[in-house]
Length: 442
Image (cartoon, rainbow, N blue to C red; front, side, top):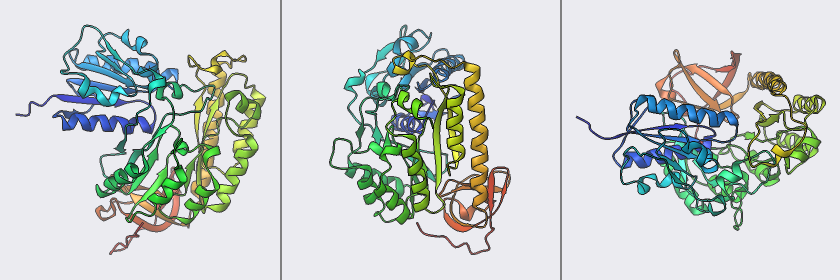
C-alpha cells in the first residue's frame, strides 16, 4: 500500500508562475511526495500567487479556504508575488501555515523539517531589494511532452506606474548563457519539440552582462534538433532589428510575437511611464509584418487607466483596429497599492472600465478571425499535441494558429507541413494525410 505523503499545487497568474510551480513540484516528487490534483485530499497544499490585479488576490484567499475544506489538517503554504508583497494580509487568513516570498518558494523543503499544522503563519520573505538570485524552471503545457515553458529571466528594472511586478520580483537578472544552452538541450532530450522562453521582461535578458537576448537566440538556433522556439512576450523597445532579421531567417524561431502596448494614446502612455511612443509602436508592427512572412502579433492593452477619457480610449480602439495584429489580451486597470498610478487623478468608473474591456475583446475576436481567415489555402508547419478531442488531434502552427486534424497517433508530437483548408468555430482544419505520413524536420 502506497503511504507516501501527498502534495497538491495551484497556480495563479502568468506562464512564468506555472513554470516555477512545476519546478517546486518536481522537488517534492524527488523528495518522495505523490503529486495529486488540487481538488484531492492532500497533506500539503502550495498556492503560487499573482498580484497583478485585485481579483488575483481575492482568488488566492478563496483557494486557501478551498484547500482547508478538503483537509483542515493540511499544511498550507502561500508563495509567489502576493506573498512577496502582502505577507501580513495572507497571515490573517486562518489556516495558512507558511508564507514564502519569491526566493523562498524554491527552498520550502530546506526550510521545514516537517509539514505539521502550525498555530500561526510562518513568514519567510526576502526584502525586494535583496532579490538577486536566479532560479531556473520549466513546465510542460500539458501532460504530453510537446510544448514546454522555460524560464531564463526574472525581475524587471522598469518603473511602469501601474505595475507591482518589480516590487514582487526584484531587479532584472538572467540565467547564464551556458546554463541556458545546457538546460535547453536537456529539455529537447526529454522529447519536447516547442520551447516557449519566459521571463518577467524577457527581452532584457543578459542585462548587466556582455550578452543580450539576440546573442542567446543566435546560439540556440545553432543547436541541432527537431524543435522550434517561441518567444512568450517582448517589450517593443527591446524587439531589435537584429531579432527581426533572425526570426525572418530561421525556421527554428516561431513567426509569432506578443508585444505589449498597454495604450494607443500618447498621453496615457506617458502617464504609464512606458518607454516608447505610439508612432514607434506602429512603425515596429508594420516593419515586423513586412519582414516576416505570415507573422502573428498579439498585443497587451489596459483599459480604464486613471485619466483615460472615453475619447482617449477611442484613440486606442481605432489605433488597434488599424494595426495588422492578430489578437489582444485585454486587462481592466486595477488599483494596486504602492504604485504611482494609484495617486493619479481621473479615476474611471468600474462599469465604464468593463464596457471598454468588452469593446476591445470583441475587436480581438474580429482580428483573430481575420488572421485565421488569411491563412486559408496557405501551407503551415504544425506541431500536434497528445489530445483526442472528439476524434480530432489539435496543434499549433508556428504563427500561433490553432488547427485540428482527424486523430492519428502517428502525428503526436510531430512537425507536419500541410495546407489550411477552412475555418470552423475559431479553429482551422488542415488537409488530411495519406499514409505514409511525411514528417518535416525542424
